[in-house]
Length: 177
Image (cartoon, rainbow, N blue to C red; front, side, top):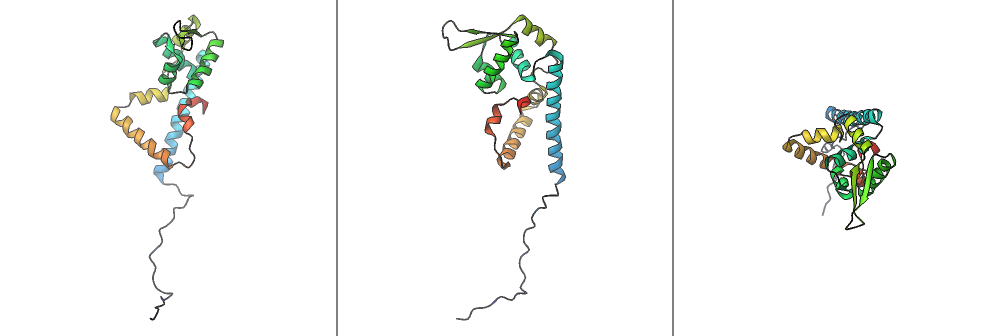
């Protein structure tokens, strides 16, 4: 059996060109710039809240939820803000120290804590700039349902492509990042 040696001049299929990491496609840069604008706008809003009423954006959102639903349980507040319960407990502790919130244990179950605004807390909410939940949650809530579903799908795909994962960040308020 005779082996056939391939000629060194034989043509090879062109190798797939590797993308030059220094060259970014315009769509990539555009998306990056839009993320920067979103986060910058959110940070500017948080700063304006703190200047105006002396509480953080997350604290204002919590105060607003308690104003709208007096007697809210800690677990319900965590759910309303999409935050971890321990994060909300720390938030409530800070608000309580400032005299803006009253926490009361349930008469029937001492493990359950209900949250109420103090008179000072009500005053802070009245004076605070809108939107109380922040500009990003407000904008997301204003999107048509079909656009929000598309955005969620796209963000899930983006998260799948990221090399570094931070699942616990999903329950962290944006101003804490």
